[in-house]
Amino acid sequence: MFSDLLVKLAFLIDNSIRYQKIKRFFKNLLENDEYPYKKYFDFFMIFLVISSVIIIIDEVKHPVNTLLYYYDVFFVTGVFIIEYFLRLWVYDDVHKIIINEYEESVFLERPFDTKRVIKEIIKRKFEYIFSPLAIIDLLAILPSYREIRILRIFVLFRVFKLLRYSSNITHFFEVLASKKTELFTLLLLVTFTVLVSGISIYVFEEHVNPNIKTLFDSFYWALVTISTVGYGDISPVTHEGRTITLIIILIGVGLISFATSIIVSAFSERLEDLKENRVYHKIHKLEEFYILCGYTHMAKLVARRLSQENIDFIIVDYDSDAVEEARNEGYLAIQKDATKHETFKKIDFDKVAAVMALTDSDMHNIYICLNIRSFSKNVFIIARTIDQNSQKKLSLAGANYLVSPYVTAGLFASKIIDQPIAIEAMNDILIARKNALCEQIEVLRGSMLDGAKVEDLALDKYKLILLGVVRINEQEKVSDKRHQFFFNPPQDFLIQAGDMLIILGYSISISYFKSRVVESSLENAKR
Image (cartoon, rainbow, N blue to C red; front, side, top):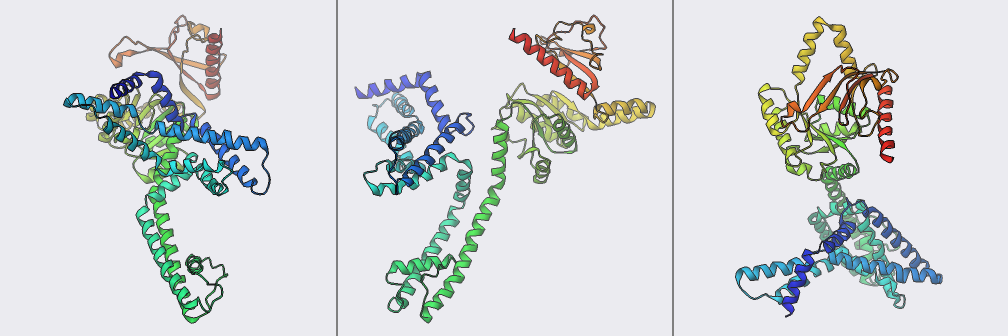
């Protein structure tokens, strides 16, 4: 009877969308650093911890205000208790344990083992209860019971609760945890040295030194001396004691050097990971951005242009020197292999405007395109190609547009011979040398461009020149035929929403015209 009820309840929870949504909300709020509301929760909990610690410390010498007493005992402690049980709840899915056991029992045609399920549930919950952070959470509740004064010492654990809400402190302890074997070895060496030197000084000094009366005094002296602090409150008076002091001072210097080398090596090994975590954290805050794979000469030119136009982008390169150079320029850069699947796992491709594969290797760019397409079928990919034989492979790999720098340079070089002035003018426009730009402007629905004729645009007023209009045919399946370009359209040409205007003019004129288009679209939407 109880087993049937347990199984029915498990399937009811598993099918409940509302339950899953609530649990997912609290799990994100408590554990997901990328969840937008978690930082507000962390700030709130940090405020509770600090205010509670201040109240408990102040209470040592002064009677606490009644309102502050109720705030600490009931509100703060209540929040801590609720948080503790919420973390215990979201740690795992109990109903899945029951369902897995039920499905296994049906498949193997054996009775449902209730005891096994209960044992597994208790085991999972105790895994959390005995985890270091959970113990800190539990002990942080104890200082609220003022009647038992000894429990106030656990106010320290309320300070330790800050570890949960500070990512920098958490990263620090993660770095140290990576060297736990070396640190444990260091702890054994320190313990052994303190024991041997403490016992030795006790044997030689106990009868002649008034400051050493117990083993605790000798161990205290040994630890203070080995750490090279040397308070001077206990000093050896015998020749044997001073000899031991000289020895453990030298040992202490060596142990401190050993400890320093462990910590420095740990941070050196994890420094790149810490930098990348910060970069990913910044990336998640971006609304729209480009991805540049490879920090080659072409990528540097693209990055400089995007930076000038205040367009967000990130650079992905496996070479550490290239990444360091990009970071020195102030760009967001990640030292990863763009052909590896793990590189883009944390990237939200719904925010990616386009991906540019700009490495010097066609084969590398092919693998980058394949990797990107495994994450998104729709993101626009621009790929650099050197060998004409690779163009078809890049297109099959998912590249939407191919750029061949040598072909482009060859065309420019051939035209310079016949038309040097015209080519120089075009080059100035392309690189914005004279502050003149060639830009595309999207016709937004409901804007002043939507449904207007070319003669109604009054581009002369904005000091702009219309080179042409690109119209997208969504029904055309062949990608090369989807974009129809109308060069120098007639005055009665009707512009539609979704068209792209190719405009030539000064940057200030183009920026002003773009703002007018956006404003007119927003005004029409409000109506």
